[in-house]
Amino acid sequence: MKHNRRQWLGALGAGAAAGAFPQNVAAQGEAPKAGPLDISDYQPKSMLRIKETKVARSRYPVIDVHSHLSWTRKSQNGVSLAGERRFVWPAERVLQTMDRKNIRAMVNLTGGYDSGLEEAIAKFDKAHPGRFYTFTEPSYSRLLEPNYPQLQADAIAQAHRAGARGLKILKTLGLYLRENITSGKLVAIDDRRFDPMWDACGQLNLPVAIHIADPVAFFTPTDRFNERFEELNRHPDWSFHGLDFPSLAALLEARNRVFARHPKTQFIGLHVGHMAEDLDNVSEALDRYPNMSVDIAARIGELGRQPRRARQFFDRYQDRILFGTDAVPEGHETPQQIFGDELYEIYYRFLETDDEYFDYAPAPIPPQGRWRIYGLRLPDEILRKVYNANAAKVLRIDI
Ligand SMILES: [Zn+2]
Figure 1 (cartoon, rainbow, N blue to C red):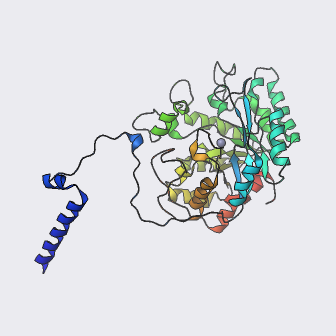
Figure 2: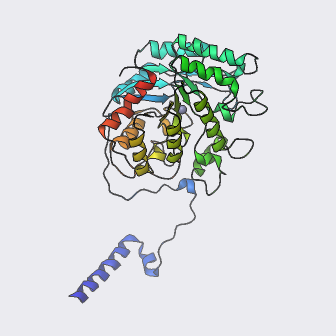
Figure 3: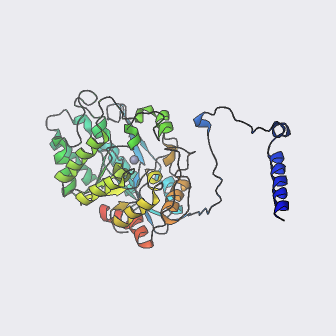
């Protein structure tokens, strides 16, 4: 009986081989060999047969605290100079997606300042009350004026009067802005000239959404060991390795000194406190600075590849994690964040289901790195806080 079974298996093996490979290869007794493959052409398909849950609408209404519905195309390295161009997205189109995806409100972080800010507020916040909240941005072009600290604080008060709901700090501060705007020494994040600006935000209850660093891999050489090699190869200017860039640790320390010096100002550390790869680091900062919260924008790729650690993080900081996507319009250079149904469905799937090994972005993998993610299946109570309650508290709005 045993002997027969072995014969049968042998026959099956031979048959399978003959079916799988061209006859001549099987006859030579060699497996077919592929030639060298360019890594950018490699698109392996997972052979896992696993559950795929479509989450078309979020379980609770969403406040997306991180989007770019209007923005300024900066002429040089993120520093606003003459010649900059403003872009504003049509609100009606945005609202269609919002309604389909159960998005109650969107925060437009890059509202700009002066007339650009007023235009964004008119087209979004005022035209559609309760659906849009626009933040202002500092104007660094005035940095060289001797009374810049006061001017910038006054500009915050003016933006507040115009209807701005917070301040957005781009990584321009710390990584691009220099003493002579585009030349000279880099201006530190905790430079004293900004103290009146941080204080003004605290006094006016304007939260500060701050983004001062990028993924850890952007601070290491773009070589074969870099986990975001393909991303950096597509965007060489995203690398902060070398030249006179501060280290990631130095940037975070400077940011922390600002948090410590302005305890009455609320700070949202964007992109999981710019350190989603090291949740111990983010936890330490959250423990030390009660005026800090975080969003998850453009970092579910990081959170979702460490689902057990991420779940602990959500349990512990469930009152301080805000939903955000970093949504940008079509045609933008970051395809993993194009605003639309698919983007939100991935975020909802990540937060609500326990699906395994799925893509973290609509763009062809790998937009950030070659890995997939696992859902957190957050309990209802935490979901509700992350989807809207925490953001409502920071923005001082009713949901
Ligand atoms: Zn952003």
